[in-house]
Amino acid sequence: MSYLSGPMIFAVLLFLAGVGLVSYYAVGYLFRKWDEAQKKRAEQTASQFEEMFIFLHKRFIVALYILLPLVLGSLTYIIAKNIWFTLAALALGVVTPLWLINIMDRRRRKKFVHQLVDGLMIMNSCLKGGLTLVQSFEVLAEEMTAPISQEIALLNREIKVGVPLEEALLRLDNRMPSEEMTLVSSAILVARETGGDLTKVFSRLVETIRDRIKLRELVSTLTLQARLQSIIISMLGPIFFFVVRRINPHHFDVMWEDELGRLLLLIALVLQIIGIILIAIFGRVKI
Image 1 (cartoon, rainbow, N blue to C red):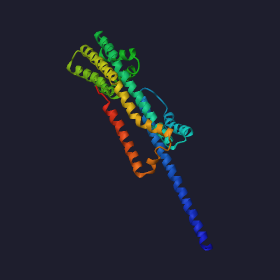
Image 2: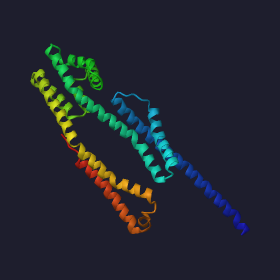
Image 3: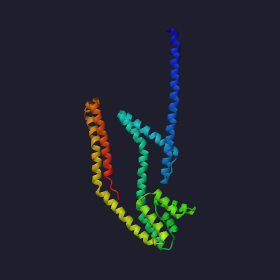
Image 4: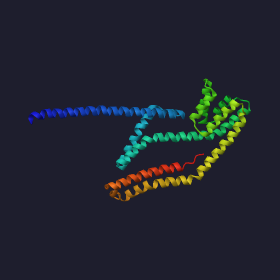
């Protein structure tokens, strides 16, 4: 036994050293991959911000992606002392930057569409005053506020460096995708090819876009109650679960302890998620 104890101890130490080295390099590899993924996401986020003319340093965005989940997770664990709440907070910290970017982008596009009516009226007045289409774009960039002034100023810079007007309009349509902007760019391109009167085209576009905005706002108002009802119905299940758990923590123990009960809880969770998704899909009204 004494003869075997030495080699066995050596083998155990060698095994532990191997595990330690593998763990060290594996952890380092995972951290490098995670850091690369965060940097890639930060670059994509920075480019999205730059499209909205918001210029942030990439290091700040990387720190936001790394620190926000850690801060939310730590605070949740300190307050709630629950691992599931902590994991949910970590997931929330990961998706929050993307969610904020999407909200900012949607608001910016919505404001751009509302500004199109005033912008077309300004361009119509410029064309009636004898200015060219490019000069009308320059006046529009000077007279209007962001975001339409920023986008039109970028359009003017592209035209000045030699980009054809047709291509510059298509780029603007890609940056600010909406049915109204597609309608405006298509009307301008068709009028230039066929020699149509742009003043009449712009007057009709103003009426069309204004009517579409009014119709969209009317539909949003009329469907507000239905959308609120869908949100309330979607939250009834989770609220009921947490309230019951708060009143009686052992109420669902019979479900957790039995295999059939756990299966039923899983089915209920899946059906709840499917119901929320279906309510969100059916609640949309596209115009």
